[in-house]
Length: 260
Image 1 (cartoon, helix red, strand yellow):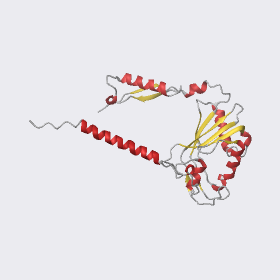
Image 2 (cartoon, rainbow, N blue to C red):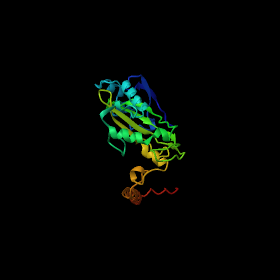
Image 3 (cartoon, helix red, strand yellow):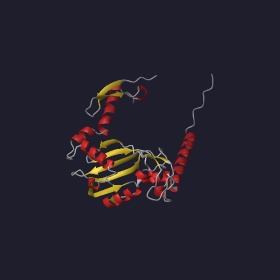
Image 4 (tube, one colour):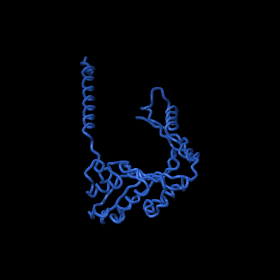
């Protein structure tokens, strides 16, 4: 039976202590006390986890995190600025996992042509987790989980399929200049490709695949291991099995002692 000790310590964010559960005694390193285990864990926190609040407080970017998040939500509310292009900087670029970088005019033209609001009248992008990047204090990150039923015409040519599309969670972001204009929009970076029915793809490519309209090239199809990668996996597994086999041959288990 192992026991655990709890201890309240500062969490590094300046908003009060958090409770650290100390590693069970059974897995402590040799000669290590509970206090040393706590110190080791705290050292890991200090070395490997940044103090976001302190980094943002030290930022010299003139727009506050709260104001940047408000600007981000404002752009989303105007259909990614398609209804108000003045929110985008002249040097704006759109960057997705495959598409882009697209300059402002090409992005607005391409985005408007899909008419997602017509094809998916019940669409919900489920935007959440808005936060400012402490490393890039002019960037707002947010997540999305698109859900919608394809009951209308998409891109002016793809007829309704009545398929309910469920996209995986995707990381998105907006970069801003000091004038408060968006200089870059990134979307479609899937966080867990096992979720949803889009073949693990995000953004429009995932939606098209879910409704059976994916194009026959790799970028618009679900991820598939290449022959080289499959061979690499096979070779690695074979080598590992052989190593275990020869190790057993070299160091056989001790025979069971005979009864006296």
